[in-house]
Structure formats: structure tokens, C-alpha cells
Length: 93
Image (cartoon, rainbow, N blue to C red; front, side, top):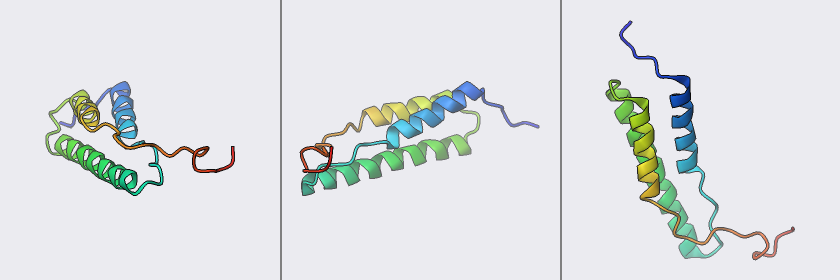
């Protein structure tokens, strides 16, 4: 068998990077914030998909390289909108 086995810790770190990239707070009810939220989520989803696709096509890459790539791209696409605040929107505490 020529497939490489990745260490469990490295795979867990990759999964954590994916969750961190896609776990963004909901936007405020402002229309501009909602648009920014959707653009950010679309960009980060695309970045994660591309990194995983590269990993699948080039299995020689270390999973840590993929993890680092996801984290770099996530850092390059920070949250720029106002997150939703239940108290400010008049919701229950």
C-alpha cells in the first residue's frame, strides 16, 4: 500500500482549522453586515475547499501544510462586519 498515514494529531488539527475557518459569528441585522457575512463565509468556504482539493490531488503534501494554508487564508479574511448582539436587537437575555 503506497498511501501515507497521517498522524491522528495532525488530522485533528486540520479538522480544527476547518471548523475555525467556517465558524463565523452571525452578522447584525444591518444589510451591509449581512452582505459582508455572506461574502466572508463564501470566501472561507472556497479557501477550505481548494486547500482540501489540493491535498486530495497531491497526497504527497503533508497534512500540516494543508492546515497551515487554511489558517493563513483564514487570517487573510478577517471578520469586518458587526456581529449580531442579542441584547442590542431586543432579544431575551
